[in-house]
Length: 434
Image (cartoon, one colour):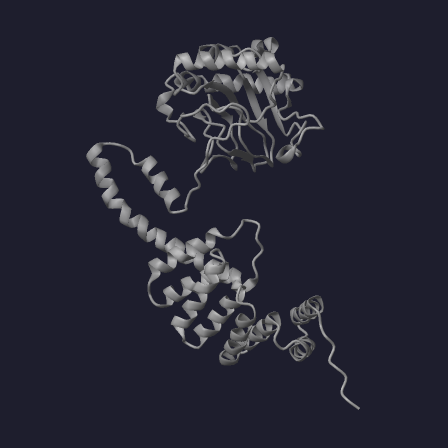
């Protein structure tokens, strides 16, 4: 009697048993795992995934020559799979066949230029050869392929951690090379190198370049500046000199008119809440308005006369139904304002810190600062920014809007007129996003 024909396994059955073998191995049942893999090797001896898994296990057991032969068969069966070429390269490296290993990696990267394992291996080859600078550049390319939320296998995670170390050392070395020549140029011209340093940090991947991304009106050709030079706003001297008085008015408000505080975020339930869901209609971030979308709050202004007088003297934006905006911003303990952008780069936002416990911070774009009570700053809120209060007590600051100083008086007036026409046409009042 003839032998029955062997069962023809389809792709799903092969991959299913392969996953079962891997699960057994992950659970510490090596014998059961090997039995499943051996069965697969018998039933589907030329399947690239089976050959690859056999090669991986051989390589882990120190049998690099056997692993290399299996990976070679796998890439012959599936030459368009970059992971197979990367594994072949790993086995060739173990056999000290460096040039062949690099050729295999180039084939993997030709198929998929951002293949993480291949990039890490390629960088490692140059590192082993002592060419740290080339290795560091390739490691940087590898790190750029990793999304923030990516969960990496342990072996890859170790290689990535090593890559970060090499990249950091290389950048420290390069930064040291910049220092003396740049300092010489700075001294010769008598000019700060702050913007140049920011430029180099972006070039070297230490800082992200954040664009202006207004949620409503974008005014073209304005400089994209995170925190503006304090010297551009000499009128802030008066606010800083009166900081103690303004703080006293705020504390009196908190003691006697707590009902005047309202949630700063107040979207309708039908609006797309996105990152605002937790703070929507929540007094963990609240405002005591002096002006809101161009409407004064007479009772609140009367409680804060010194603050009101200073605001009248500031170059606040004045647009019907839109501006000025001025309020005390109260951020509760253990509360974070998520990253967001504001409405228009035609104006800037001013902060005068009043009550700032330890553990508070503020980021605009790539720069993070701590509020210092009584020290004001102006920033472009159309650049992504966020704030946090990790302390056990509330934080309080005065916030108001002023014109972007790079707008001419004529441009300011034209923006005002256009905005008022737009608002009348649509009858809208934008929601807060500051």
